[in-house]
Amino acid sequence: MPRFSRLARARLAVSAVFAIHGAVVGNFATRIPWISDRLHVDPGALGLALIAPAIGSIATMPMAARLVHRYRSRPLTRILLLAWCASLALPALAPNFPVLCLVLLGYGAAAGMADVAMNAQGVVVEQQYGRSIMSGLHGMWSIGGLVGSAVGALAAHWGVDARLHLAVAAAVLAVLGWFAGSGLLDTRGSDADPVTGTGPERPPLFALPSKAVLLIGLVGFCAVFAEGASGDWSAVYLTRVTAADPGLAALAYTGFSFAMTAGRLAGDAVVRRVGPVACVRVGGLTAFAGGLLVLFSRAPGPAVAGFALLGLGVAVVVPLVFAAAARVGSNPGHAIAAVATIAYGSGLAAPGIVGGIAHAFSLPVAFGVVTALCAAMGLGAVALRPPVTGAAAVVPGQRAAPAGATSDEPTDSEPVASG
Image (tube, rainbow, N blue to C red; front, side):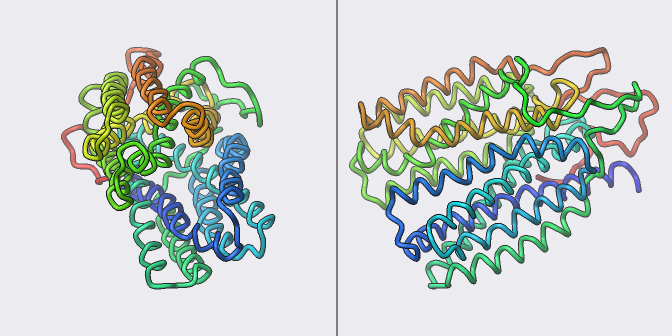
């Protein structure tokens, strides 16, 4: 099979994997109220239970790096995605609160490990293309989340028992994920380099990230903090600060989500034109402007526009952070896991920190902190600059022409699969 066809098929496959991963999240999020009502869990206890997925995810990401290094990517990603889909059915079956917490811990662990594996697969496909595709892949995740949440909302509206809904969704997504995984590239993190003939050392299970990985992770930290704060507090901000009614307040998150999805889908073309550093700088400036608009808005319209600018500004940052991490050091899987742990740890902390600042001061002050982090994200963009290891170095957005290249390799003038 020509290389172009193989890569096009791999890109479609990994795009589907990202969408399926997002669809699991979307389906689950819509049935949290049903689970809470069934177990008679008050909001405080529910908030505690919903920390469990983040803890499980962060705790197991280093283990995923070891698995990515040791096992071949195609079967590993398929198995981890299958486990992630299967975990969707479990929260609705929990008979009591302690079991729910344990189930959500496992749910988060499956999410984090599948996340690392699919991002590592996406980086490999991107590197073989020699062009940016990671933003589009994360855009597919957002689309999957939107579709999953729409399905879940319909199921809830029709009064479908969440145990049935989530079980059916888990089965359908697992089947789709298994077939999509057949098109993935079959590589392994320990494979020998074709030039040097050596492979990377096995990553430690737990180790402090290098300075380069830490700086990249901090850029992701700022982006995910802004994303988490906007996702959890945008509607609350509109109701409490701008006196919007609940229906209008919901538009804040809708605007944020759709702007972020659109930005990710269009992001690869921008990255190819201006490069990752300039893209994150512009994104930081856009998010900073959106944060200022939110900060000083006392009417719903400008606040909704501000949250949309925030979504657009952070849209491509996380995909570019993963791509940059894979270019640092000799263990891409380990670097991706380290950056994911830092960035997603921010998502765990953001809602609580914003709530604490809002309680001590006010919501506008809390979003002043978010706005400052957006500025820091733009200023830290230089951490994503691709390392130059030689004249033939290839980075997304710039394709080198290796000796012996054949006409079936994708170039910037050739069509590629959408994603």
